[in-house]
Image (cartoon, rainbow, N blue to C red; front, side, top):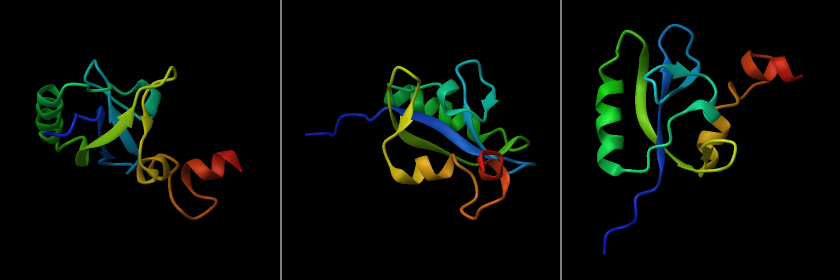
Length: 100
């Protein structure tokens, strides 16, 4: 029996800054996960992935990340994605410096 499709978002890294970005429903990149388009159809997710992968002048490392729907937008189902959206793993750099 095939496994059920897990909702996903298209994610990548911005080419110039290196920031984690997510694809929105209106085809723009955002740094805010809650603004990302949550893909619930496997075929549509694959089309969005192919289209985003062709945008080589904007992003690198494009892939589909598993998410779960919440009232506040998509949320990661795996710690890797949760960790990835917080920025570098060493303190006082990027997004983590803003919180400290």
